[in-house]
Image 1 (cartoon, rainbow, N blue to C red):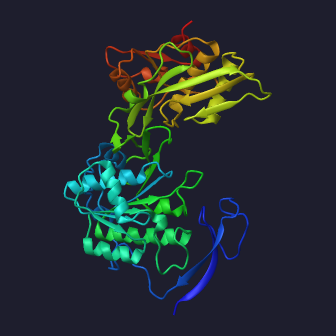
Image 2: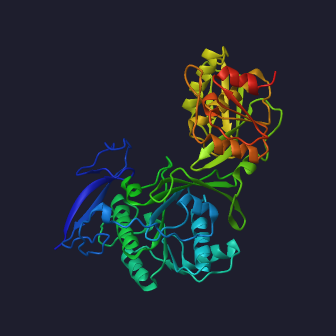
Length: 455
C-alpha cells in the first residue's frame, strides 16, 4: 500500500525540508518553500539498462567506437552539439520566454523528418492545431512528423512505444507530470521524476531527446540544479528581444566542446543561420571614432570578431558610474584602475560605459586589452586605427599576457581584411601568420596604446 509523506521543497534549488521556512538554506531565496506530497510505492525504478542485469567489465575490454551522429542539416546546431545529434542523448534547451526555443526545435524537427527520421513532437503548452499554425507561419512544407499534445508522462511513454521515434522533443519539461508524484506540474519533484523517466527512455531505446526548460528571472533553468547534471548537454538560447540575433550556447556537452556557440537571425519565416558572424557584427562599425576597438574572441572553437565600444565622460555624481554590457563590469573596473595607476589617467571623476556591439557576451580575459584601448581612446578623444584588431590579457602591473589559440584569431582577422593585429609579445614566438597582415607584439599596456591610438 502506498504511503503519503509531506515535505517542503525550494522551487529554485530543490532543497528539501520537513518543515516550512521563509528563507531557503540552500540558495538563500525567500518564500520559495512549497509543500509537496510524495508517494512511497512498493515497486522499484528501472535503470537505464531496462531492468536487465549487466556485469561489470574491465575498461580495456570496452570497444572505443565513435558515436554515430544524426545530421540535423542546421549547421549552427550541429556545431553546438559537437557534430550532430547523438542517438540516446538527452539535451536540455533553456532560454527566456519568446526567445525562439520552440521555433528552433520545430525547424529542427522539420529538417530531420524531411531526411527520413521519425520525429515525435510532444507539446504540453500548445495544441496540435497551434503547432500546425506555427509550421504554416514558418513557410515550410509540412513534413511527415508526429505531433502530440499531452503532459501525462505515462501516456507520452505509450505513444513513444507506438511511434518508436528516432528523435523526441518535449516542450516543456515544466508542464509534464508523473501521475505517481502527488505534486503540481513544474514542481521540483515532478521535474526531477519526469527527467529521470525520459532519461531512462532515451538511453534504453536510443532516442535523441530534446527537452525545453523554462528559466527563472535570474536566467538559470527553473527547477532543481540536479536537472542540469542529469542531462548530456545543456544549451542556452540567448538574445535580446529588440535584437534580431540569437545565440545558442552549449554550457555543458558530454559529446563535444563546452561554450561553443551557434548564431541565428530571427526573421519572419523563422531562424536563419549566420554563416559568418564576424562580418555581421562588424557591418555597422563606425570608422575614425574614439572609443571603438575590434577584438578577436574565441567562442568555443570558433574565433569571432566583435566591436567593443567605450564612452568616458565627466561625472555629475559623487561616485562615478561604471556600466558594462556584454563584459564583466568587475573586470572593467579593474582595467580602469590599471589605466589610472600605470598610465596616469585620471578616471576617478569620469563615468565609463562599455558595450559589446551585436548583443554578444564576452567572458574570456583575452578581451582585456581591447577594453583598455577603448576606454583610453574615449578618454583622450583620439580615434583608434580602424584596421587594427587588439588581443591580450592585462595584469595588475600593466603587463600584457599571452592568450591561447592566437593563430586562429589572427587568421580570422586576415579573412575579414584587417591590416594589423596587436597581440602579446609572448605569442609572437612560433606564430605562423599570413604574409599580408602585420603582427605587432606588445609587452605592456603603454606600448599597445602608442600603437593603436592616433595622436
